[in-house]
Length: 150
Image (spheres, rainbow, N blue to C red):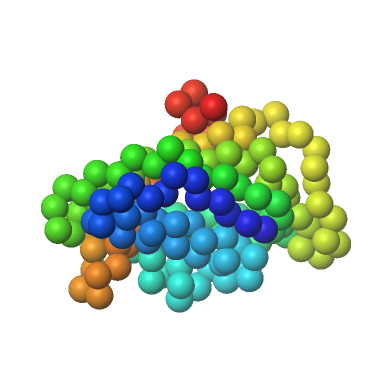
């Protein structure tokens, strides 16, 4: 599995730090899915509050179905707003058209086209912790949002 982050450098130091930690958050969720670890310390390092609880539930949903994933997910069109020294928001898009479910037990990859749109819009809120890490505290996602269908 691979995550590709396109256009995740703005040239602004503060914004790029936020985007870097958002990318790490995405990778932490996927790592927890692959390892089947709802209590991943990496997940808890990059997510807090509602965002951590929702990620743990998301990982558990994959486990309940005996699934992981393979392929490539493309993340693009990040829009970052740094409100102050410790608060930020990022909206970004994902294209999951080249990502596929994989059965944990058999290893079989399901490449059957989904009825759902492969495009997802994510809206996130972040707080900088005392170590300088931008932790995601809230995440909303919307599949099929036309702003990402490009």
